[in-house]
Length: 370
Image (cartoon, rainbow, N blue to C red):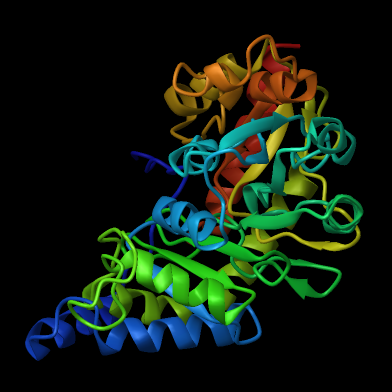
């Protein structure tokens, strides 16, 4: 009997999403239209207490346009983590501002408040923490630093749909937040992003920037982009929005099952959850001995048919594209995490049998290296 491969991530697209796409195609209204507007309103009501929400064509566009809409530009510095996807630092650099990389704290993999404090200069305009893997950043500490120094907070919530800190939804904490709707995220629109905005002014600026600087056709107010979401993508997202809470609950249950199964294995550290946090497990990320991580990653795939992922193997401050912003910078916790992390499948499609396979395989490959 052939055992099926368990992928690290698995987008869920059903008949409802297909029917929604067909509905839009039949309507003849393909570009930014009523589906986009409805998706914005529904997303805002669902995740961020009704804050103004602006749909765009990707999460990276959302982050870039959000920064521009909030007034970030040349001469400014924005403090960001190095342990994240490159889009975080890229989006700052694309505004003409300078990304300033800070270290992470080891439990949540999110920005370390003391490293942030040490990175502040007279040019610092804001802090852009990442709610990494679905775990919120240390909101209380970062907010205290921002208040003390008069800095803005911009949230990278690409992986954190529905996460909370002390009962506060992510996406309601900063001047703006970006949620990604890429296929492997906790919900998808096929491709796309959402900007949730603390003020109507930032929302209006973002809408101008996504549509060639126009609110009224041919009356271009600023130099903008074509970063519009299509009604096709919005229709998919609207259906996914009705399912994401159940998927999140299943991710959380899968994580609990993995925690139980992987407890007390030498060399394996299961994910930490801060007492103030609600973790939505975009990724279930364990720490392994750095000398064993790559062997275990390969063995899970080749010997047991289980996908896993290393997010992220090269810190941003060492990437050829971004290293010029951080000459000689040392971020020891970032470097350690990059050598130790491995994300195991946690997606809501997993069966109990597949979860048992994952636990059994990790136990076996971890013991094999002992």
